[in-house]
Image (cartoon, rainbow, N blue to C red; front, side, top):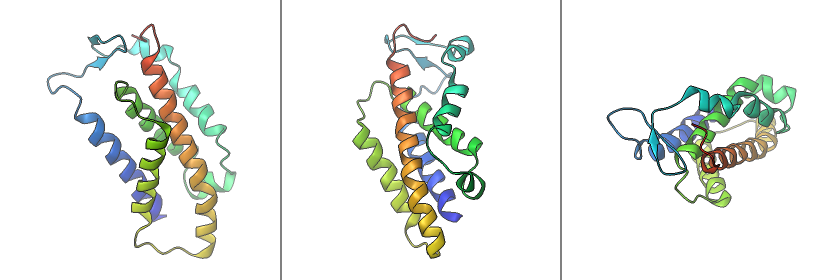
Length: 155
């Protein structure tokens, strides 16, 4: 479906535009919630157990087998959740509310739907899929924001 591609691009663009402005240009650094800046540490990230946690998030979001086959696969949904998790993680200093994130996702949905026509069956499928997708993305954001603010730092 063309809509999902537009949605993915819109969400990715929002995440990239917000997170790249805060990154230093010289070398990749990660900011600890305690305010120090250190090079990325793979061991610290492993302790966060992201892959199983994000997989569980997708599993618990209520997507049907048909949605996973026709709209987005489990892996694609997990990648989308990881993107929003990462967006929240690097934006740990910014006080985003759930309502702001939800509004950002709604705007991406609206942008993706503008000018598109769908069959009635596709509309019904999207009407059931999109709330689950939105809820999963908000939860992924909450998870990333909480991990970034957790003490001690994961690095």
